[in-house]
Length: 111
Image (spheres, rainbow, N blue to C red):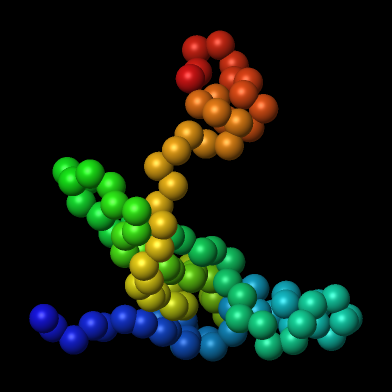
């Protein structure tokens, strides 16, 4: 088996080379006001992608690709900051509130 390339970390914007993100700038400003803990890793988006074969029955645990993405504070481009793989559980049950979502109510024609 080949050596894993994960975790992958990207410390600067691939477009302009800026090392700051919009979320980091906003977090730092809130930390100066004492509203949040300084130097906490933050990102604008957190994606979780199950790594499972849709043709096979679901397992209790599967590989999950976690991606943190953010916007460049220099040019505004959205790019991946970090990607890693973990093992986790996949919830195969109905969404909260049953098949119709939170509150169990959906407009006619849905669900």
